[in-house]
Amino acid sequence: MRKIFVALSVLLLTFSVKAQIIKRDQVNADNLKKMAGSVYAYEAPTEPLTPAPKGFKPVYLTHFGRHGSRFLDNASNYDRPYNILKEADDAGALTDFGKDVLRRLEIIRAEADQRAGDLTPKGMQQHRDIARRMVENYPELFTNDKIIMARSTTSHRVLVSEYSALMQILRMRPKIRFDYDSSNHDEPWMYTEDKAVSAHKRKINAAVQEFNQRHTHPERLMSALFKDPEYIKTAGGRDQSGSLYSSLYDVASYAQGSDPGVDLDDVFTYDEWYDQFLMNNMRWYSQAGYSPLTDNVIPYGHCVTLQNFIDFADEALAGNGVSVMLRYGHEVTLMSFFSLLDLNGSGYSTDDLESVADHWAAYNLAYMGGNVQWVFFRDKKGEVIVKFLLNEQEATLPESVPFYKDAKGKEQRPYYRWEDVKKFYLAKIAYWEDFKAHDDTPVEETPRRSYRQEINTSSN
Image 1 (cartoon, rainbow, N blue to C red):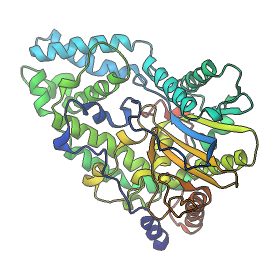
Image 2 (tube, rainbow, N blue to C red):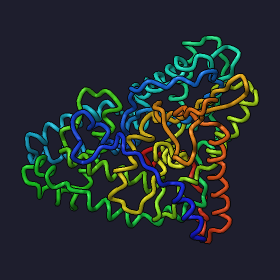
Image 3 (cartoon, rainbow, N blue to C red):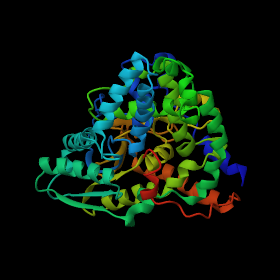
Image 4 (tube, rainbow, N blue to C red):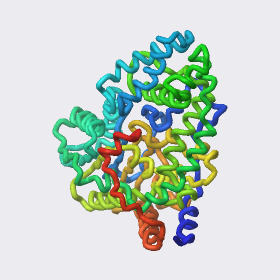
């Protein structure tokens, strides 16, 4: 492998954004739900959008969104902590606090019965609201003479997310035309990762395991749950404290995406919530972010998705009748894609794993319902500008890409000339093709699993 390519990649990834980053000593009741990281439940944007420069009208919106909030993907994820505590309760080993946690687990587990992996009602509402705001913010794009195109993976929860959004648009625009589908045909740009990144991705596994060991501290919680904390170290013939600790975090995190009527927020101290978040965040940074430990290449695995955004935008701008393109998929795609886009410093690169969460946080990226939107505007002279919305909040590119300047030379943030944006992203795609041509890292020959297999073994 030629080091020059890695160096070039690092130069493109030098900016990080401190805003909205939560430090350990800043965790509190108001921001606690963000400690769920990649499963943080989507909330409506709070900042107003910046009007387009004078003379520019919206002409196209292109989007990629993760499905909304869902239940844990396997019933065993609810059964495991419940069964451990139920057996302990039957043995008289639980404290009063442990009994109360068991009571709440039973309620949460019952709500999720036969719903493993399904979109929750809250997840449906998230996508209805996102679609509603699209129509309200850009009514010119949702007129009867336009075509709304939508594509999704064939995962059930993604389909329901897509249909929730489309039904909302239909309520507001009953006569609008749709071109929608859900097919394996679109999987290359909707889901599949370039297999050339696989060998690089494996390089960080040992470092992540060591990181997780440093941040796993179940001792206090076990003492709070069990009359004798030694119980959990021998029950079932092995020490289950670490497993119970992480299982309770999963259930507690996902509970915010539904309405069970109870929560497990108080099961962990703020410090413990933060440690659990760090491990969740590290999982996704190591699998989707830029890092010298993985040769700064993993996000390039979704260059096909980026090329699709560019191609579809050019076709729409040329007049194919499509005013809105909606894509619905999984976080396994979006985490890498967001890093590749480098919005708000999401292309941050470091080999210091302990500092990752100070710059790159999953609760700012592809959490439940997370999405990116590129909104295009054109004036009467044919000039095309674009702005980026990351989870419906205006976002910026690295400083190397200049903001659009009007005729008086005044910078118009957060708008960019489409030609400058396209040049920036095509350079990334060209870099990746060049990198692959010179990369001597062995490519894994095992075929990439389809998302049907992936969604049963990951937290997509």
